[in-house]
Image (tube, rainbow, N blue to C red):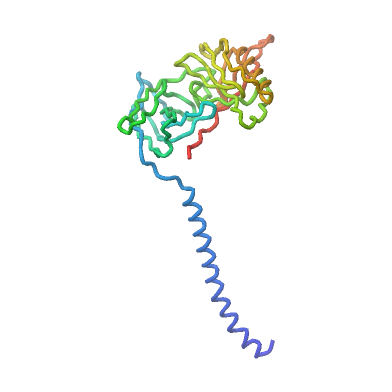
Length: 288
């Protein structure tokens, strides 16, 4: 390279070295601004209300170490879908009841014609230990947003020793019938599910087409379902699965919960357990 060419190139190289950091800084600034803008657009609005009250037990009950407490305000307006979390309060380290409730939520998520309830639960090392007793609706008037929630110990036995959620008042989504996976829910149809309502002594849910209701009896790990009353709508896309589901419900003899799965079983002629129905409790999603 000639001395003249080097003389021309040297100032250009200096200018490029000075310009590259400036350009990089501009790109970084633009990227940070874009991330901030995107993040700010999805951040939820802060809570502007709270449910107050007390979670308590009617009897003295020892809670082992490793206990956690959670209380939630749930939107249960749609009976054919899992409830949505409107507000949540939790303690990772928990030793005893009572607990003062302060469940924050956004009033924009509470519709005038919606249905909202408060539920609470105590877990010990991931196993459901106590759960709220009965139904505790949210009052509409701000002055009455006070809910006292009694908790009761859950049954301890082979059927529930691995349960991460209680049997009662949990939304159980049907996943298998006699070992056969459930097909995808057709558009516009409710998903097949089951809810156990001990206060009313009945089960309810849908078979994927019609809603149903029926009595049940439970003792220990035994479970028997009585006559089922269901709708008469004819659904060509889900009617077969619904018929098999309701037939299997009537044949159930026992239940067992493993984590977030519910197994309804019976004993066959060879004295072996046969899983008739398998359900799962989906993780609750937050309302938006």
